[in-house]
Image (cartoon, rainbow, N blue to C red):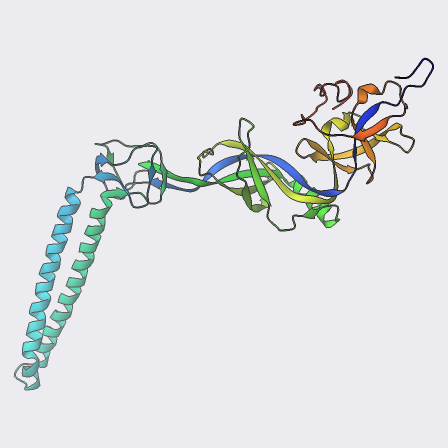
Length: 379
């Protein structure tokens, strides 16, 4: 401790040394979840629903039986078609036998060639009648099979829209049920065309660069603020700007094996479309944000703190991305602001070590105890 009349030692303040690093620029955008595949189960024949074979809300497999429609009239039609096939086959056998029997006779002029030509024509007509009968039988079998309604795709089936005893029609607008595949889902979101243009210009001017591997990972934030542990991937960005909103549509594919994402759900997505090759990250409590601009305190060569205006580019894991205003090797004060009682008083910079998770400081938030400036001046 200093004696009377002696100058007190400079107070210790926590500082971070500015260093360049590759910084991925994150963007957070609102989005909606949609299934990868969705199919409406519809009746393909007319009839009364006799039975339902699935549990609502369960997983179904492609080809699984879902409903049974009264098949009695279609079974009768199929039986009649099979009888017509048998009759046509018998007629063809008879016509073929007559042609075979009269073939030698026409060569000996025992019958006229005109009569033999008629027999050949009848044989061909019988063959055509058999083909038509077989086609009709196939059509009848198809309609009979349609009386058993099967799942067109695998997925989770929702509420049944009809009950046993309901009369359904192949021309009916209402679906019987809806199946959605949600093991993997799409997240559709939009970004303003102005942001996209600004990003492309910055990349063209080499102020930023696109991701080196070309892949753009997407993180999904749920409505409660929690982030899914698994990241998705950006599939595409639309080439057309919506004329009414000035937005560009983007789509990401996200794994959803645990079913946390539901079709139609509102989420937020975080993605890094570009990166700064020489970016600077500072703890948020080191930056004072006001209406006049953003500033930090830099320890100069004399050990005195001096304000320095900076340009903030965004937030990254509770840190501000600094685009300009600082040089590599400079020391920025992070905590110990309350110890600097006299402006311009020398300070003793010591390396700052974060204690636990640093809170995201805002203009109205209180700083960490004995670690940062008063709430009215720090952000």
